[in-house]
Length: 223
Image (cartoon, rainbow, N blue to C red; front, side, top):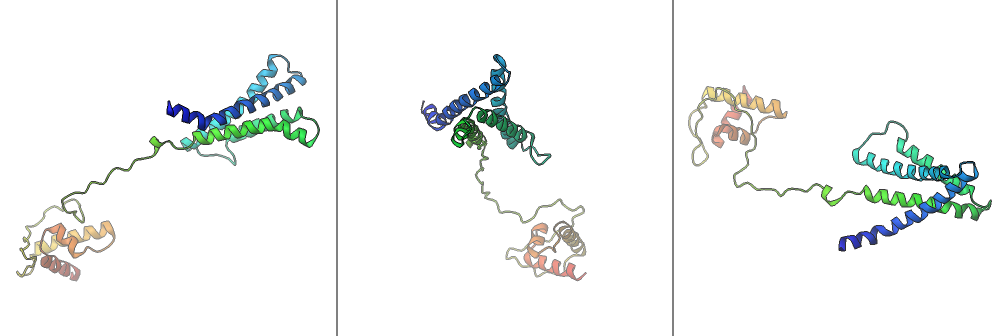
């Protein structure tokens, strides 16, 4: 009940304005059509056609905005139709006016108010609804440390020297097979990212100690 009351308070005045202004514009168009030979039901049909054409064109403009339809010319077809309906409606209203400035203003008021009400309703209908706004999902923080880089494993990976507990490796020079593998990993990284691989990335990819990763990087840079 509260939603209905809020909707009536918010939209009711615009709907009432559209109905009253539409009725006034409708009467002017019908009278103009009757005075120019379109009597009986035809005068009513002409008035309905002009007013509903404006409403239909406004709704079509709204649909184009929602679907993202591209315009193929200077103006879209709905805008052209809406412009024609406005011109016909204003012309019919002015035809019923006294030939004075205030006569033209007062006669054009119903048509202008009707078009303003239609544009207001179109503007409200085209506003995004709360359910249409994308919701951002909460970020889930993983307890495991992030790996700096992941890539498909290079075949024929040689046996690696495990890292020592203190992070240092005072052993002999790196094995040639390990150097060749490190070279392939470095080349793959450079080709993929456009920059040389760093010691930390090489250590993460090979699973070796900081010292061995530094030795391998220094060795492949001198090759």
